Image (tube, rainbow, N blue to C red):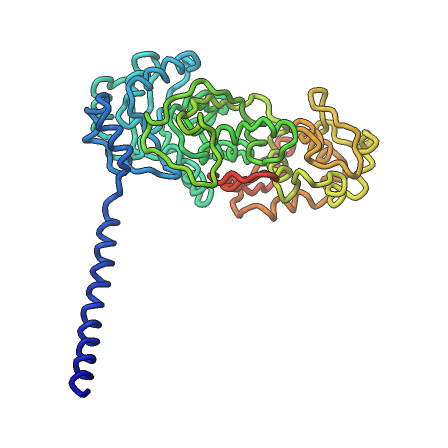
Length: 439
């Protein structure tokens, strides 16, 4: 009995001594595995079995051989698609507009653009890995190429920092491209895996961001189809209420120019089980043109108010219009029901002949009963009523925006300055009936 007890105790001690190193060894091995990126065998096999990629397969950055749900960058790796994109773009690129190419990578599209159009090309590459390829192109075309290692689509971060400390990061990024001329056209070409830059442009227009220095950019962007369909959702024009798509459609003209194979861009992406995408979206990316409208939906000084008016915590599709507006201006419902306006209405702000007519309004009329143009009409009538300047709406707008402020001069009164708080456009955007998990 005594011997057995000692043997049992020794066994336990030995097991404990062995158990700790084994556990630590397992964790160590796990950490070692995390040091290197796990390559996607689908991607590697595709590149190895396609003769057209034999010259780049050994120089592709390893992180581009993985699959991502939401990559930060996308790179074109196919000569044929580069030529196809260029043949489409030359029909639209303006002869007098400088061209910016974002993340040119191996430079396939750059070389095609140099061959097919005369404008100087400014390259912005976010990765040092492709410097040798960009140097080769610049050596061959020293007067037509200028490149910089910088994250052009991450410009919104620099704009935020410039606003906070009155810096000049945007000017340093753009250098000779920086302009104060809001009508200067700049053609921006590239692949955009997210909506951050589009939201930056919305932010710039709505909140009069003086640090933009972009002029009037024309975007020729390759992007995932579900992002384009989110922005260009036609049901928003009817009655669906989504804040970001509504503002996008009010501020920009947009169209699909072509569709290109998704596999011709790295890195590849994967979708979650809950994400709904079409068969086309699974195989193709959209080449889209996005240009700023020449006519804004309202006066520039009122765009921040429109931004807040379209927020879902102000109006949702099921919100009854008259009860909501009467929280701001008591008794204003009578003007909507009768279709008339108070005698002291500000005619400069009220709807014009080009604005949509409203249907017969009752206290039960909901925001979702109106199309996008009619919602603009409601907004214009609301801000044109004489009681608006005394109502708490403007103060509420300022109090409910992030603490990112700039001063905007009132053109009518040089001494009167409105304090407009400048937020980032929402990263998460949902409609009343569905959720876009990827945004």
